Amino acid sequence: MERGPDLEALSALAAVAESGSLTAAAGRLGVTQQAVSLRIRSLESRLDVVLLSRSPRGSTLTAVGELVVAWAEPLLAAAREFTDSVESLRAGRGRTLRVAASLTIAEHLLPEWIARWRASVGDASPAVQLSTANSIGVADAVRGGTVELGFIEAPTVPADLGSVTIAQDEVVIVVPAGHPWARRGTVSPEILARTSLVLREPGSGTRQALEDALAAAGHPLAAEPAAVLSTTLGVRSTVTAGTAPGALSSLAAREDVRAGRMVPVRIEGVRAVRPLTAVWAGARPPRGVRDLLATIGRLARRMPVAANVP
Image 1 (cartoon, rainbow, N blue to C red):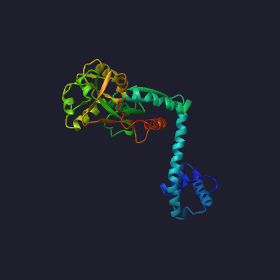
Image 2: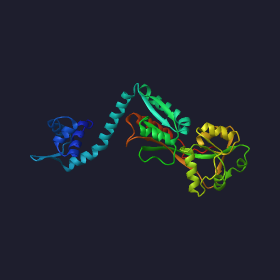
Image 3: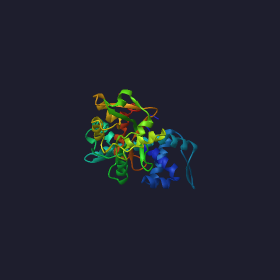
Image 4: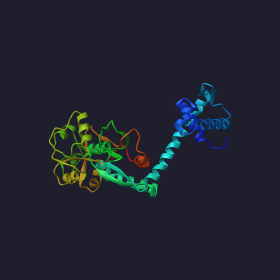
């Protein structure tokens, strides 16, 4: 076969296989029965094989026809994906893509990811409207339809949303440089569980990851927090001021650690690693965000499995 495959003819054959008749296939494709028959005859001629067994009772696929349909499935799926992607470029001009993200992702990852995506797509990309919330708030925004795409940091992904894990991050304990734990570099989970900490609010993925890791180690957090803040900047400022040890994403703590304003402390025998996850409503990502997710996936693969603070 010198030319490429005839996608219209393959689509007609696949429609007959799925619907069970030429008439039903024609209705599905929005053409006449004669058009479906002619497309398949043309394909038979090009391939020099019999694809349909025709009789007064109707037409059914031959064994060769079933084999050709099986081979054609990934090709037709790729063609549909291509068509959807081109359509998303058209639809993207002049529209806004609404994205919500939990704070660590919004502050430390998404700005670069979005910039790289817009540079690769160019003028066809929609404008991105980014809002921030904790992981529970992001999931609620996706469910409510106020955003098309969300990014969460919670250890558990909502089962009612479509999702893909894009990277992993580690929650670390940080203290001011003069704190006794800074000299040792470690703290036992038992002592940590009895210590008042600077924490994010309930519903934050950072806090949930630490609580889950300590509970799994048999030492759930028991002390009342020294402070509860709704932003990572608030936690950073409170810890560096010497209020108490705090829990932060390794991404959020990195700048202060490198500057010597705080020191990471390892929890003996415990690591609070949590996924960074994209979520959306429905089984598949909305058509308009698939290219963005593909770009983010490529960039995120360059991240370490857990972004430890140096």
